[in-house]
Image (tube, rainbow, N blue to C red; front, side):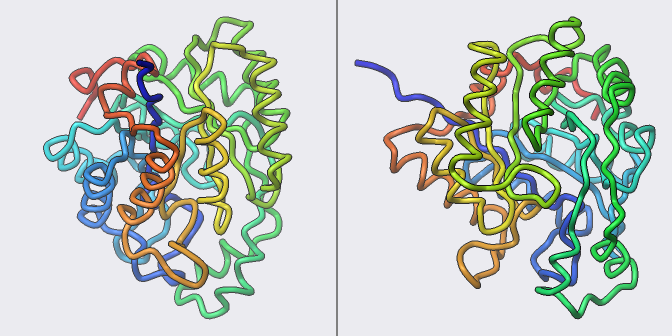
Length: 309
């Protein structure tokens, strides 16, 4: 009898896109981030993707010290794989963005594979009454270019590669897949590649089913059996795209970084609720969730005993 395919669920618990005024449930303090990550892992997430925030006003904080309090708590309470962002916020320098992963040496770090316009400003129509001035300035900025040049990508690869950290390659458009192919040809990345295709963020590819199929076909052509595919659907696209990907042989990312919602007009109270929805999709297709150790094997990770926290 054939064994059920294992599906890796990643949960991105807070991120740098949504702001605290948009949802009272968005984790901000280190204890809230730790609780969110542990809850997501208990609900079935094999990987937790982590950002940090200033506990006073919730703005993104990419100092290594901001990550320290919750990394140790998560490790003690769960065997989940920890993925630390190198994206930070799109307004940060690459040196600032890479420091937490450089300091804490996680099993996985995210890596954005190309520069792009980054449009958060449509959210102002949905959230006109933001509490902090920094939220209004950040979300309303129509001049953000998320800078991920070839030199910056190579800087992150070489800075983190020596510690054995592997990467979640975030690809927001077709060109990002071709950029990744370049780095594979140059020997700067090694399979199995963990490719996270991102849909529905303004400035990147859309969230139509044909967009999802196009990215999958392109990745198949460029990488063959050298990669593991996962999807991230922004906002209302989160669960429909998760369902598509699971049915097409992929893995899933959910979490309050990507969507504040559990369903139409219903805010998610916890990240674990969204993981539970992803679990229903996976198991409804007759598939199984990958455990953290199964995810480590699938992605050729170094193991939790070799991190720096």
